Amino acid sequence: MKKKENLYFADSVISGLKFRIFASPIGIKKILLNKKSAVFSNTSLTKLQPEDPYMFGVFDQLKEYLNGERKKFNVPLDIKGTDFQIKVWNELIKIPYGKVSTYKKISKTLGSVNLVRAVGKANSTNPVPVLIPCHRVINSNGKLGGYTAGVKIKEKLLEVEGYVSLELFE
View 1: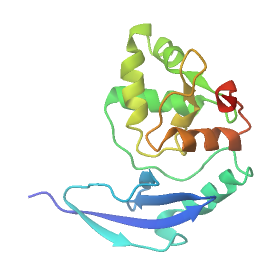
View 2 (view 1 turned 60 degrees about the horizontal axis):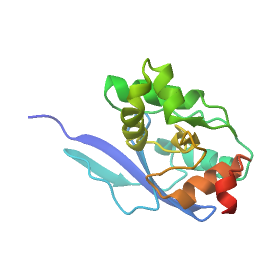
View 3 (view 1 turned 120 degrees about the vertical axis):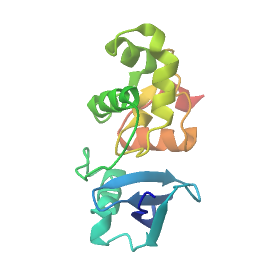
View 4 (view 1 turned 90 degrees about the horizontal axis):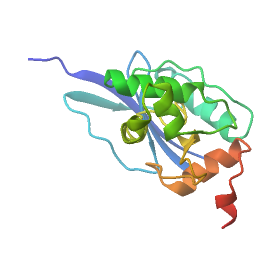
């Protein structure tokens, strides 16, 4: 029988966004934005305070980011995905603060323009949004597209970074 994994979680509201963050002793495992719960199998969950050392300072870094004081995160991650998802998430990390890319551009980088839907799916399964900036990916036509936490949150994150889309004025 597989041993239960010990995970920690903490909640905080930062700049109007509700964060629930899960961490292992290795690093940040999952971030939920404005959602109530996540399902983990074979785990033991312990609630912590946001400033607990097992949260790796992620709440402070998110606060700095949302205040426009931080452009990169340096917290350890403990995420898992398929080889393809990991490749997509690595491409997302390369998108500079305040800039955007498109699903099509990322799929070309990964070898085929036909991977657009797969890139979108991998983007939507990013376990640590904001830390891995999936909000920086938009449609080729300039529209913001979807976001697992909602388009309004995507807009807010892009506004924090100084990116302005014409779609925001429609």
